[in-house]
Length: 438
Image 1 (cartoon, rainbow, N blue to C red):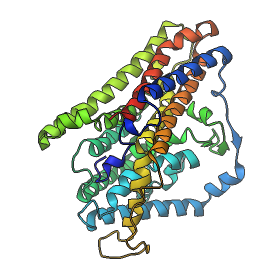
Image 2: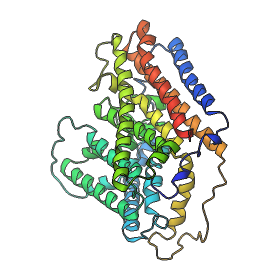
Image 3: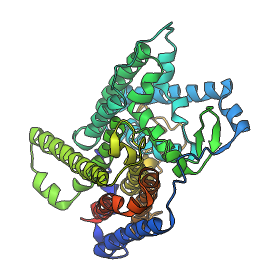
Image 4: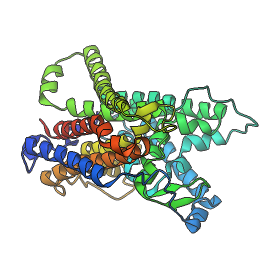
């Protein structure tokens, strides 16, 4: 993250861990392996593929009511207007302007708890979808064939490059230009292609919808809100190549974020000029995404050595069949990397909101209040980091195993999953090392 308080994004080194790094990594990897073998012994039939959930008719009527939709749409528009106003017309200093914190913490990190708790709510409040819908159209162009989710992948790559590579990503003017450009592109595409564009082209909406699949609240085939097993919702992730690219990009970028905080990396790159910095960091980001993608693709395709039941695969083959198992892993990585950062820098977003345009106001009456760094200890931060990674990988193993029971016959089930298990163990140990090593 490019903000001034960037060092808060993590525990600050392996010395903060309550247990040795090697023990944490080995224990977490062992937990994933034990989970796999327990599942292989006692779980032989799919349990999530056809689970619909319990309809919540009353809540559906409330959420789908026009006043509720108007309130959500108005809230989204107000948030976008405030973000643009602060970034364009507020202080030019990242330390005095709330817009960078709102974008990188409140929106990017806040998408995770909001989507997990409230399900597919982002789509209802998405201001870009709302603005595009204000332009009357009698018909829309058809989306190009084979486009599914790749525009969202491209947009997400641009945002992550701004966050992790560009040295001035926290400058309010940079935030203003990015948010304005991103909004114009997606609103224009929404006007041309209709509401369907946002489901495949708006990176933030697509990301929120993917996260919402792991929420206990979801929508069924009749578009009713249902209370469901979150892993059953996860099983409905579309099996598309673009979705594989999206999840591998998320995992790889988080891995690079961890690597870029290692002292070895900062010692090597600390004296680079601006152009060299951009080249080295861009290459590092692409390599990290490439390594994660290669490991997952090889593991998924290696399961093809076992015979697959007819009709079991979608458009993206075996990688697409198992891509949903990456969602809890991505969430675990995100929580591990952003937990302390969000808890501390998130306070700054509220404190700066008292004077969003740098006029000397104190709208919220916070006065000279400062960030409270004492309410979280490093031991708690480390526990949340390790716990999030382990839980994410265990849920990933469960999801992958359930899908495997749908694809493979029982006598082939365990052998078919060994490559994916190896990848999960590697992701687990590597993830813990990334967030704890100095």
